Length: 248
Image (cartoon, helix red, strand yellow):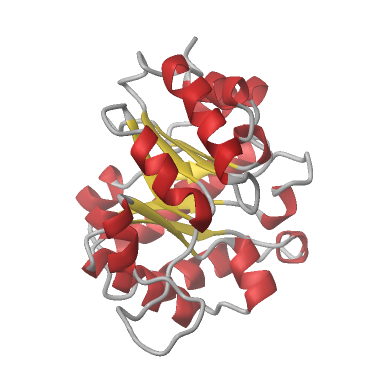
C-alpha cells in the first residue's frame, strides 16, 4: 500500500515572516495526519527558517530547484549538499515552469535528479504535457520521453513522480479523475518497462494542476494517484490542511 504524499509548492511566494506565520498556523492542523507524508517547498530564502520551525513535526522540507554540481563558479546556484545542510529531505526537479521559462531540457533535468539523489535527497520529478501535445494525441509519447530521459541512471526508490499537465497548472482547469488516472496508469506502466514491476508498483505518482480541497478526494480515488503537488491552494494553511486531510 503506497502512503499518500501531499506536497506544497509555494513557487515565488512568501517572505520569511509570511512563511513562518504559515507554518505556525499549519503545523497544528496536520498533527494527526500521520497516514500522509506532508511536504512544504518554500522558496530558497525561507528554507532555513521553515526547517527550524518544522523540527519535531510530521512535516518534511523540500527545495523547489537544485543545481547539478556540488561546488564551483556557478553564481546564483544552490548545490544538493547545501540543501541537505539546510534540512531538506526532498527537491522538486523538472517542474514545467523550469522547463518553460528557464529552458531546462530532459538532459538537464536528469543531471539535476541524479545529483540530488547522489547527495542523499529524494527527488520530486515532474513531467507533463502542454495543451497542444494533448490536443495532438501525443501525451503518452511525450511522457515516455520525459520518463526515459529524466530517469536515466536514477535510483527509483529515491524518487516521487509528479504528473502535471501544463494546461492545468494555475489555470483553474483540473484534469478529470479519468484523464489523470489514464496518464498515471501509463506512467506506472512505462516505469515498469524501465525498471521492474515491483519498483513501478511501489513508486508514488502525484497529480498536480489546479488541485483544491474540493477535488482532492475524487482524484485520490483513482488507483494510480498517490497524492498531489499543490500550487495556489497550498498558500493558505487551512486550504492545504484540508487537502492533506482529504479523507475527512
